[in-house]
Amino acid sequence: MFRAMTLALVLAAAPMASAQELSGDLSTLATAQHYLDAYAALDVDRLATLYAEDAVFSDPTSAQVEGIGGPFAWQGRDAILTALRNWSRSIRTLNYEVERVYESSGHVVFIGAVYPEVESPDGLVRYRYPIVTIVTIEDGLVTGHLDYTDYASGARAP
Image (cartoon, rainbow, N blue to C red; front, side, top):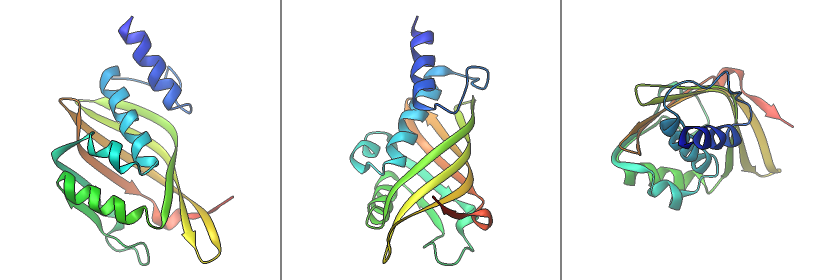
């Protein structure tokens, strides 16, 4: 019964994923989806309860991209939360459109697109970037967040 309820929670949180696309430990999948929801909302208070003390956040694809404020690479819960608080000054949300999700050995892989909504002089602007996000869960906490973002394919979204 727990497995069926957990599967229902994961499917409800990731509507783009179907039952055939989900594989791996459902409890870990549900924890990662809960994290991704908090991250997408930039809910720093909720994220503070989800990160392990020694968590690592990295987007190596951001290292050489002009104008985005990267590279995004932080070690430790406090450093990550500080960076995300700074983001929330201009980024309102980081909505995900998940096409595929799976879990393997504590790593949950989300494949799809991210839609950051950013404050600009012209008001709120929405972009779309293809992305692979890998969330590592250990003992029910996030120990790693790794993004591979296709910044070159990014475009303004409606």
